[in-house]
Amino acid sequence: MGNKNKWGNLYLVLVFAVLYAPILYLMYYSFNSAGNMHEFEGFTWQWYGEVFQDTRLMIILINTLVIALLSSAIATIIGIIGALAIDRIQRRRLKDAVLSLNNVLIVSPDVIIGASFLILFTIVGIKLGFASVLISHIAFSIPITVLMILPRLQEMSPTLVDAARDLGASRRDVLARVILPFIKQGIFAGFFMAFTYSLDDFAVTFFVTGNGYSTLSVEIYSRARQGVALSINALSTLIFLFTTALVVGYYMINRRAQTRTRRSEPAAEMGVPR
Amino acid sequence: MQANTRAIYMLPYYVWIVLFVVAPVVLVAYYSFFDVDGNLTLQNYRTFFTPVYMQMTLSSFWYAFLVTLFSLLIAYPAAYLLTRTKHRQLWILLIILPTWINLLLKTYAFIGIFGTYGPVNALLGAIGIGEQQLLFNAFSFVFVSVYIFVPFMILPIYNALEELNPTLISAARDLGASGWTTFRRVIFPLTLSGVKSGCMAVFIPSLSLFMITRLIAGNKVITLGTAIEQHFLVTQDWGMGSTVAVVLIIAMAVLMLLTGGFGQEVRHGK
Image (cartoon, rainbow over all chains, first blue to last red; front, side):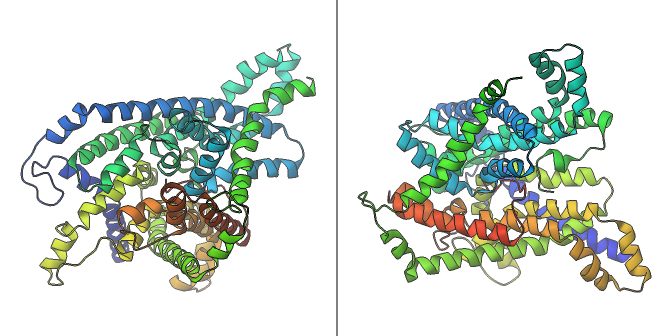
């Protein structure tokens, strides 16, 4: 048994090593004064300096954050509405149908989402750029926010709403004081997922950005196509640290909230297939 | 409350469904019947059924199959071993973390790792195999894709294994089943749902990864996704691009039907 365990652990170590190797590799060479990704010459902050002096990159970074914040906020609001709408449907088959429609954008390949949105924007006459990118990010974030909020809504006992109504709460009060506080955690999770989806998206954005407007992943793609540039490494190191802080922070907040309610399940909370 | 006020505040969501779920699919289908000059035609479909496109489709499916197979072979044991570790939550978080790193950055890392002077070639040189051209071929495409998708295969399998009742395994062992028989007759069949959703979460996106083929495979591998991107953004032949997209949508729908419907697989491979 002990021997078996040893091999098992070795395998896991190997999986983790391969999983993290490329990320660490990028980070390591971001300090390379030689300017390439294969011969470490000496330590330098040069590439980080380059990242911060690159005004174009800074503008793109701000674009990316603005899009992520705006799109996830709007998607969360529509997601709340969607979850309420689906929760209210009584007929089982209709409910399943709406849920299936909800999930179409989650399971569709990004290329198809991107291409079909490109057609849509062209027909409607929306200029490619900020507006088209924002709208598409909202559109592909909505289904995930619905999926994060709906389970909380279904956990809620209907008697809670009845009680509030009996005690004279208006429809608005019920929503603001009973329903929304109850599903707060789902809303928060949905917003977080939408935010990271937006930060991370490449394929859809690539289709709907016109000339002149760019987000971080589109920019990284076009720079990477030109070959190795260590400012990308520096940038990716910063992004990695930011992402890690985000995920760990989210995990901590979630865990604290959940120890009060139930056993924590990070996989479920993060929208991972189960 | 009156039914109509209800309907009004729910409008944004239903508008979203119509505009961004139903309309795009209809538009893609509609555009697939037009040629570059805007004439109504079936030519795109005729073109699709020529050997060039058929071969591309077949190879796209073949590569997606390979990527799914290798991901599964690596992920299953990993998921199994993870259920056996202490601090499982932490390890799973560490599996999830790399999936939050931008796909393009991870792909970009491999340009350095597999490069002519990269560490893998240095290693191959040191053990006497000699330098190989690792980039810009099918190998690098499959490797990088598997790298990117393995976490998405591990998670659903891990969840399925977590839900497995351990007494069933003990019972099998008590009744004299060997380790392998227990796995083959008890563990694997009971975690099949996780395997299925993992395969779905890998296979479909692998059909449409165009950035990896562009950055790593040097256009040696052309997937359906590459073809769609090419038609939409390079040659501007939206009709043909839509036709390929329609084929991809149909393939997707068929796969969903075969594997038992719409799961809640997570989007990835962005």
